[in-house]
Amino acid sequence: MVSAGMANVFEDIGLLEPARVSSTPRFWNVLYTQYKKLILLKSAERMREGEEEEMVVQEAQAEAMQDIRGILGRRISDISTGGAPTSVDVKQFLKECFGKKRVSEGYACTEAGQLADDDGTVYSNVKARIMDVPELGYMSTDKPFPRGVWTGQYNVKLVLIYQYVL
Image 1: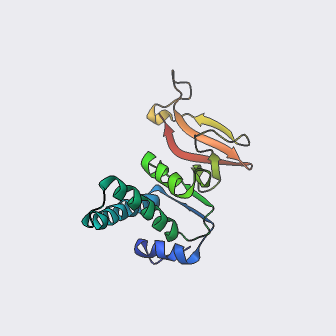
Image 2: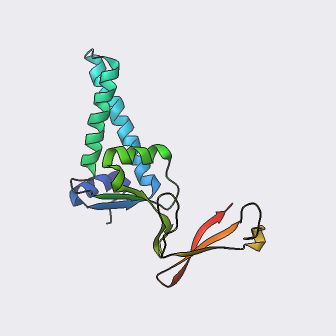
Image 3: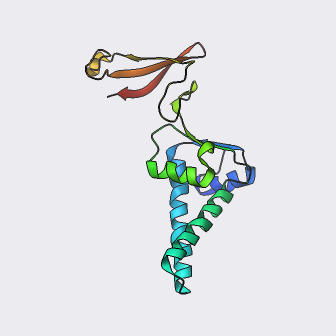
């Protein structure tokens, strides 16, 4: 999907109504920030009407969650995030908003696709190892923890994960 920019991307996704949205943490951070703003706006409106604060916040959260679900369209069945670590708060928000089984965080690279599960467990059909990076002093033989560049072989293609294991 190509959008006119971040200002329009959520509107474009809503019109497209995809079944799956996969993006970087930056995208999900923007959505999470929008959710937090909606809670504040909805809470402020109700507080002026004199409602009890605890109930106001709970109702505002529920309404904001519903609004956010609508932003991505009605057909969402899967959400994934990757390319960088996603904050715990954002992952929790996505799971609460879209359901735990619908949200995944992938570890991989663009060239090969996902190589490991949400918890970092490498898939059984992936051969993984740590390669030495002598120029940085990182060796797979380092004790107590090996260091280097994590590589994985998947679908008979060697891929390099650009993340040093420290």
